[in-house]
Image 1: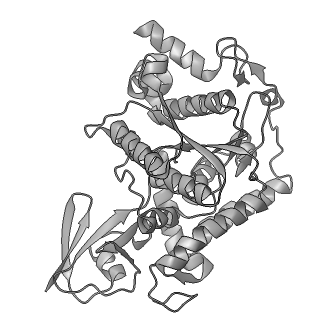
Image 2: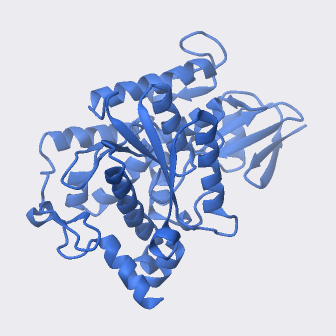
Image 3: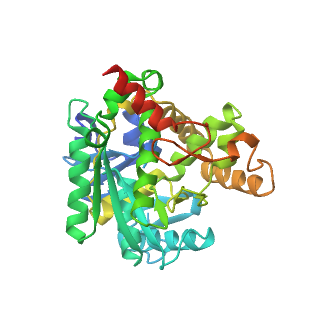
Length: 67
Length: 310
């Protein structure tokens, strides 16, 4: 009963049935700093993750001088 | 979560505006808001020739896309910094920029720091005191110099950059912590034209970084995900993380901090020239671009020192 979360080249597993927000918090990531994408579609934080799914997490902040 | 406009499935929640939008309404909202900011802050009009500085990242490519869709006359400039970092950072970011321009039939000017000035950014950073302390500072000085030169040479009336609210708030936070009055007086979404200096604007300055990333993803703009290898451990990333902790507890805190700063500035809290000597611009004897230092500008001094050491 797991869902795969991929952040750059790292993979995490969480239990199915929780929200994106909860899943991010579970693996120690701030929901403010990542966007969740499933099959090319963006997901809001209240979306439930389902058994067998793979969710890509896209980091939104970049450093240096910006642009 | 449902789209506030049509009731369909929302793709992004924008907490500080009490909004949630589906993909199609989000892709309309970003250009509409951008146009509103361009007019509100009198950035430019359709008769201006705009040069947008692109890095291959989400902000600058999204900005170019939006300005192009809004019908502005806009060309791009990509500065090849010569950064590898073990994953061909500059080569990849150049490729994303070229592909973006080619797909839309837009003009992209490419300037290589190494070919134009003999050394890449990592080499310049290695061979100068400024760079050993802060490689991002060498990069910033170089990009500002090259962008301004290209805008002047190409006859562009406006230079646009993809700075977003998180970029701006991180700079504001850093300058406030150290009470750097002169940079505080200069910071803003529009930097007016001065003799030898192009007018600079930041049309995305009111969008959160997650909003520009969401636009690039929803619009299907491929961009470089990987961070610049020099940005790791940078002050700006640290400040952004701190400010996002604040934002998580108080949605809208970043926007209020920045907009209230602009109001305070307008009310005279930061006089334009805190240090009078900084207001006197003179042409650099080497490149001709304006400088406040007297003698060569910071960029020419840096390149000169690096050439002596090589």
